[in-house]
Length: 318
Ligand SMILES: O=C(O)CCC(=O)C(=O)O
Ligand SMILES: [Fe+2]
Image (cartoon, rainbow, N blue to C red; front, side):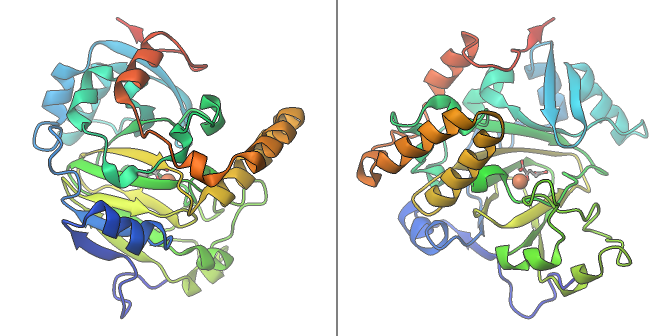
């Protein structure tokens, strides 16, 4: 596997790029990039750390299903205390990933405002798209980890969404591979968006010899940076320090087709009738209408989650 020493960096680094230029050069070309300082204006940057989160997060218990540890309960402030204790030699607590901030941590939402314009347009916010079509990943999700943590599985994001990962505190390494390297990355038989290679940082080359041919790149995110992982690119992470980040997703005309195909395929596995209807509906929906997507409305999302308007259990407050 060739990493940053490859002659040509495939993930461009940019700074101060306008939204229009980002869309033209990266999002519409399905090309990732690192926008250095892309979220440095968020109040969270410079404010969030474990001490701050221990005080700011209201006492609560949340139940999460993520691909690190299956279903698990995280209790606050105990979870943050465990991360702090780990820094001084305690056991490694679980990596908290993909916890919808608007649902589980509304007390932190104002710190990641305004919603990043790089994430727009987001066609899933169109009034033509049923709100539950975009499974439950809506808005901004918290990623709370420490040295020794990693996302684990090398994957392409679910439904070929475009992903943005904002680094708030500490550092995080990403390894990224272009879509055409999938032939060397052992996509799993059950889910071709997930690799069978269990540790891409130090792969078992007897089991996965082709991984040596894959051309990927490693990059490090620092506070204020925003990584754009374009639709269809393989990636995973590892952390060498306490790391606090958030992630948000978008679907634009550049990945709308693959998004629909994959979302409908998944829907058809459990709800074939609904998938058929949705497929007809989505074919009828015309692009210009979808472009009227208003963008992410954090106030409305906070309100909806506060009212329990979703099918995941809300946090239980202590
Ligand atoms: O930041 C990370 O650890 C990886 C997040 C990620 O890839 C995801 O949420 O899909
Ligand atoms: Fe991902």
